[in-house]
Amino acid sequence: MPSPHLTTGSQQPPKTEGKLRLYSMEFCPYAQRARLVLKAKNIPHDIVNINLIKKPEWYTKIHPEGKVPALDTGSKIIVESLDIANFLDAEYPDNPLCKPGDKELIQKIAPITDLFYQCLAKTENKSLEEWAQAFAPHLAVFESELEARKSTFFGGEKPGMVDYMLWPWGERAGTIAIAHGAQLPFASDQFPRLRKWRKAMREDKVCSEIYNGPEKFWKCVEMKLKNLPPDYDSI
Ligand SMILES: N[C@@H](CCC(=O)N[C@@H](CS)C(=O)NCC(=O)O)C(=O)O
Image (cartoon, rainbow, N blue to C red; front, side, top):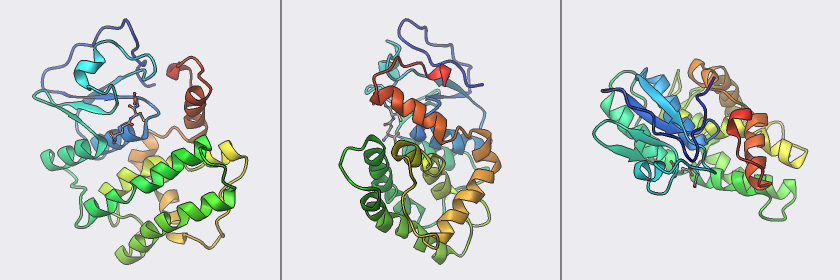
C-alpha cells in the first residue's frame, strides 16, 4: 500500500536521521525512475507521497517548482529524475547500473515521452496511423540499440540504467489503447526486440514490485484532463 498523498494543511513528516527520503507520487513516471533505482540498488529510503494538484504548503521549500521527484539526502535536495538516478548510481556501489553510451541514449527517451503525453491528451488531431508514424523513428533508435547490444536488456543480462529510465513508459504504453479505443497500428513484426524487452521488464522483480499498470495510470491522467477532485489514494 503506498503511503497517502499529502495535501494542503498537512505537516511535513519527520525525517529519520541518515535515511534517504524520496518525495514522490504513486503514478508519476519520473518519480518511478528514482524508485526503480533505489530498489534495484537496495538503498534504504522512505517515500513521502505528494498530492500534486493540492500540494502541501511546505513542499515548495523542498522543490521550488513543486514537482516530484525530489530526493533529500540529508545534506542536499536533488531534483530531476535523471540527476537523482545518476547520483544514486554514483554514490551507492551495489549493482552499478550505468554502461558506456547510456547517458547519450537516455537523452533520446524525451521525444518518446513528449509524444506519449500528446497522444494521450490528443493535443493534435492525428489518426492512430499518424501517431504510430510519429513514434516509429524514435522507437527505432531503441530497437537498433538492443540489436547492437545483443541482449534482452539495454543493461545486458539484467536491467541497467537505460532500462529503468525507459520502463515507466513501457509500463504505461497500454494507456494509449485505453485513451483511443485501439492500439497504435504497428505491424506485428515491427520492433521485435522492444516487444521482448517490454515483456522481460514486466517480469523483472524490481519492476513488478512497483507495477501499477495502464488502467490506474489512465485514471490518474483522466483526473487531470477532466478536472476531477485529485484523490490519488482512491485509484
Ligand atoms: N523533468 C522532471 C519532470 C518531473 C515532472 O514533470 N513531474 C510531474 C509529475 S509526473 C510533476 O511533479 N508535476 C507537478 C507540477 O508540475 O506541478 C524529472 O525528470 O524529474
